[in-house]
Amino acid sequence: QSVLTQPPSVSGAPGQRVTISCTGSSSNIGAGYDVHWYHQLPGTAPKLLMYGKNNRPSGVPDRFSGSKSGTSASLAITGLQAEDEADYYCQSYDSSLSGVFGTGTKVTVL
Amino acid sequence: QVQLQESGPGLVKPSQTLSLTCTVSGGSISSGGYYWSWIRQHPGKGLEWIGYIYYSGSTYYNPSLKSRVTISVDTSKNQFSLKLSSVTAADTAVYYCARGLGGATGWFDPWGQGTLVTVSS
Image (cartoon, rainbow over all chains, first blue to last red; front, side, top):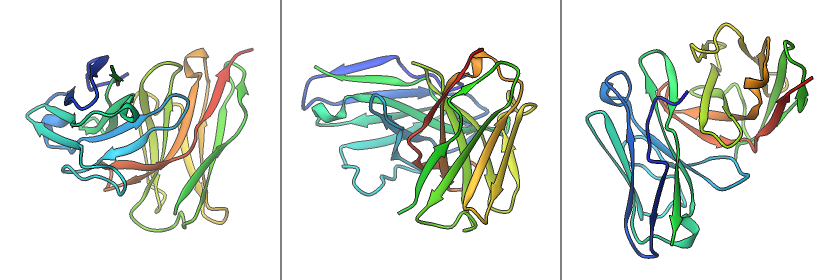
């Protein structure tokens, strides 16, 4: 039961910029909790992409960036590459004392 | 480099208890500051947080699963475990274990490879 809403899919040509939105509520993102992002290739486990206030784990290129405003957050991918084709999930915390994930977005590189 | 590996039965009968273990290597499960977590993914669907256990033994569960979930830790084996009781077909999913960082509101890294558990008679 996903509490955070993401668009089912986004697409772009190589080199373009795409953004993925993550919409929550006043009990999670709007309450000030950080939003974290993961990507998942088919048949594999999710991998951390962004955490905290726009931090990237070692090895994640700076083509990925995150932002947050009000009850929503966004992940931007600039200079889209074929290897970016994957499912992307946002994650935060809810005041109901629960970790919460987004519904997931499939990124397609045209 | 910390690695996690899930293990347990891939098939569980309805009404029985699902039991999985996560073995942590490359680091001590007793290290402070980490929330050892379980997350699941229904086939073709999104991710659902199940719960986590802090190194001190404190547990936090998803309210929607709380009545059926128990997470425990065995520091001598560097493992933590998940038990989900009274399972139904709706509990069929890939179950992941992961290390939680940044506090109870933080992120998960790394993740185990995941194990598919099917609930069927």
